[in-house]
Length: 412
Image (cartoon, rainbow, N blue to C red; front, side, top):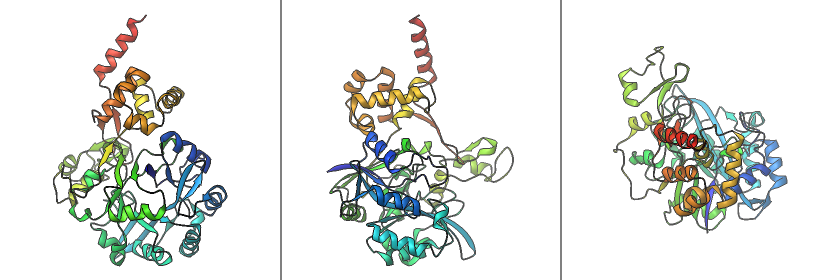
């Protein structure tokens, strides 16, 4: 069966996360989006784990059910540690096939730090040692480096990472078969490194609120159970892992280099011209994902390896509606319109991805339909995100907006 999965989210017990990130709301929004399988996130937190055990039905196949939405037990660990005289900060995801395995992982990791401090705990533990502990507990776990290019907290991060997967995970490297692209990169950027060809690239929302679930996701056509999904990811099976859904990477908040305090956004070329410093205050800039990929790449832009899983760049429906209406995406009008679109045409992914052009134009306002079609065709302009600031999307040009305003005035 074909289904959409979003493995990486956070619960209400993580910092800067909506209190609506509970099982009820996650399942509700997964259904609105059209997502069949969600990661639970945060299984290391004792209170969240209690809620998971109390609300999820164990299907006996490594997956769990709530209100017709499937769940897989997942968490993210932040490792901050010193190795060979340098400090590293690396985030990794752990996928567990059962509560029994999860309990064992939590029992062991609790000796290394306070798991109750945050949904995504910080442990002073080498990433290689963390992987070894997890696999020693249960070989069927999945251990996936998270958002691998993020500057401050990832395996390739410009501020805190490594140049090679092998340097980070050493003896555990052969047991790792997948990487998460993160919001500021897409598979096409990862394909520029031949060393990553053996890894399956997955994409997830890393959502801190229900509305952002599925902003990145994975589309499978396989049996809906833990063992099969693990096999598909391990084998990099293009027949059963159909494609990933991606942000336009420029929209991610670390795509370009820059210095947020000064409002300075720099392309990799501009960073080199400024010797890595902010032209306004002369402090070092945060080197973003695009620059870091170029540092490590051994292939040109646009290279597609034969084994690469395809991907589609999409913009969430609420952002398209907000742009079409010329208002902020958190406004009540956007949510009303969002719900009205779903009532007419089904889930968000069906609208963004599958609804025929003529159906969109018949059922939705002309401007929203046009916005969806432009996004499908990649006809968008984005000011790249930098140093923690999301990129700014423009689907409609200033000329489009002027023409719309003139049409509206002509009605009066």
